[in-house]
Image (tube, rainbow, N blue to C red):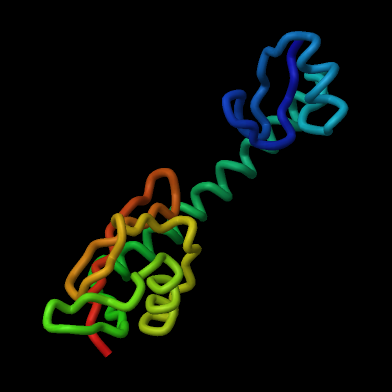
Length: 149
């Protein structure tokens, strides 16, 4: 059974793709939930327009992620945290939310904390690199410097 996907489904395809599924999967899961439509002649042309819109949106998202990446790679973000002792141990740790708020305050760029990968636990003063993945094709490191308050 040929189905045109109306939304992205992991393991099956993206919006606008024409996929071959078993009759039971199409009839009992995809069609009743509105996740797909039968691939008739008119629907195939509709799928082509959905793919074109998806590709345009994806290209725009990739371009905006590239500009953000080029801005953030050149900067060092400073995060002030309470520290004790001569070793510079922090009270608590630096989280992805702390990094997002520091980036917003220092550059004006708003990031999603779920797109950041903070190394194990930042519990001491020093320089670290946090990985940001804003798009499937755009992954970069943000240099942060944790300093004591």
